[in-house]
Image (cartoon, rainbow, N blue to C red; front, top):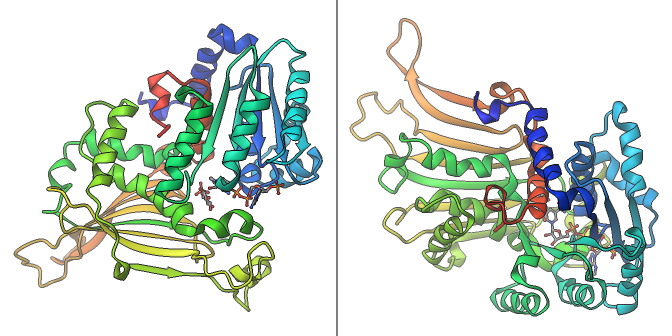
Length: 456
Ligand code: NDP
Ligand code: BG6
């Protein structure tokens, strides 16, 4: 039986066994601190993921969750904000109460040492002074990473266990600020305490790109400029950035999505075969691709900002500038398309078209390779170009658009699809919920090669 066809409980059983065979994880108290607990990432992804891990028994028994942000909130407020994203079934209600009993929230200031001393006292109280392992998740705008990490280092390190920091993208604002952030973090923490996260690398179909390319003979010979006409990488969301102006307006869609999620996917499509699936080998091949990409020409970029739809309902009525958290007259882009070229022997001349936007017509993330025309046409121009599509979300799928003879008493070519839709091929639906979970498991299991490939 293939590993993908195994049931969810089999897979989780194995992970659970691995966790619980490890003495440390069974015995030691762990505290997961969500910095920016009042925000969009926290409610949509972090609290739901912690809940799923807790519900499925994938966390060490003595695990607590502490939210921290400036807003004066209660745990009930956090619970109400996160619940719509937690997919709780009636049968899980008791477990849900147990989860929230492990949660607490503290209001404080990112720049004030005093707030972090209070946080430390709170963390101490959870482990009754016996020591614990701490994970600090920066679900915050990068503009406050410097202060927050300095304060964590100064006031909140665990003295009897380990402390780790998870840093969200975008990693800085430009090359200089990214280098400054790296230097700053390495002045505070050792490399194995720092986790840089791009959650798209935890998505099932993004991980599948490597298997698809390097685990099949059929794609290798056509995966190059001789056969590929263009590669389109798309990210679309049907909702805007309402309430996120505090973060989003300083960064815009290029730094929020294009330079991390879409570029990560681009490198997985364009890179040469790595020496192994080990994370360092994969990283090395990705870096080679990035080094071959020339600066993007201005005439190869289109930017836009969404406006309200007067006929829409609720939030759809509102344009980007109608959000009170967005500065008046902001020119921040919420939509961007850019054409990149990878100047190497495999890809010279092939456009890589990156498209991303908020408040668009649908939710979609996909990679689409369009192949060149078949030379020497004998079908009177009736053939469409082949396309290979890897749909990351929603509804994970890989499909190839191809020509086939129209069935019956015809001899005409007709476009059809070779379709691997995960929903119908793999019944167990463990894919989409767990893009954050896989990364979170990695946090616990760093050093285990099987998992660490998901961290960049
Ligand atoms: P939010 O705008 O929701 O900000 C998170 C929290 O940070 C807010 O609740 C607010 O808390 C505080 N905050 C906001 N703006 C400022 C500011 N200018 N100065 C100080 N504190 C501020 O952003 P997100 O949660 O969407 O994003 C946070 C990080 O997570 C970003 O780096 C983003 O790239 C990343 N991310 C987001 C995802 C998402 O789905 N939203 C997914 C993956 C990554 P308070 O005022 O209470 O202190
Ligand atoms: C985050 C961006 O990195 O990814 C958000 O900051 C975006 O703006 C989110 O909404 C999308 O993630 P997903 O997993 O819902 O596609």
